[in-house]
Length: 361
Image 1 (cartoon, rainbow, N blue to C red):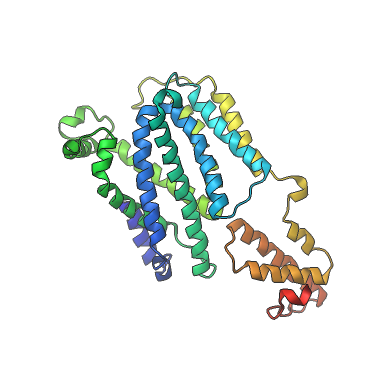
Image 2: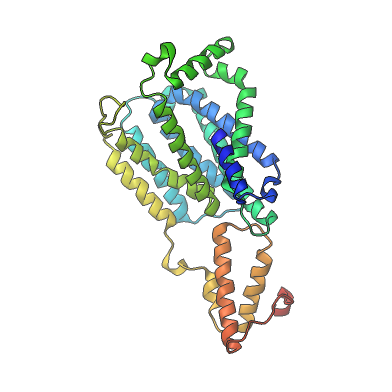
């Protein structure tokens, strides 16, 4: 959190963060902090009992929650190949990791911990969809501009830390730690992080490894948030699944502090192939829809149709569109303006701001 805020301050001095960005409504950011705090707490508590296999079984619910929430709150509609691609990605993750785990399925862990993990994924999905909503809303409030990533990260992390502190009495019991013993756990944790005192013999690699983890984790989170900003929550989630086979493979290497390298799970190759195929199927478009249908219509030499498309773009420009949709709409404008320039023999395109849908209906 502190590093996010420091970067935000630097961006402010570099004029990359404006007063308009900082004055955006804070209630969605507070909601992000609450969702992230509850998701982290419930996920850690359930993860202790579920182990790897059950965790991966529950991961499928994460994609399902994202698809459902984006359908409800963002009005997204998904093609069959996109839904099938998401299904294959989830199956690939499960095969890649769970094939190497002997125990720890959802059924073995018990209904309570299984439901708690699924709820954790629901909260994470709601968090990402809410962030996407904030980016879309900011584009409207900033009149086409975009909000700096570190505005979202800094405020979200600060509110998350605040909610974690408020919920500590409840969370400590959920984690199996009596609240009265919590200060001792925090003290030992700090000593372990700094590798001092009695904990120095039990925390090999500290503080280097924890600091490296923080740096890598920050880079990973910033990358995913940037991808979410330019695409969607579902795409960001799908891209993050690539880290699963990469992480599994790295644990098989003779790296320092890992001890004896583990072997690849039996289903590693098959799971990775299924995962990658799912990603390819998700991004695939049929040949008859490789380009925006409106763009295809726009290149037809029909002046009335072109005027209808152009005015439609003007009206849609005032609604919440995804970055991809905005880019496709922008392509229509470019095609139409080029057509007008050709029609006017290189002269400037005439002003169409006075035209309305009714004039060409």
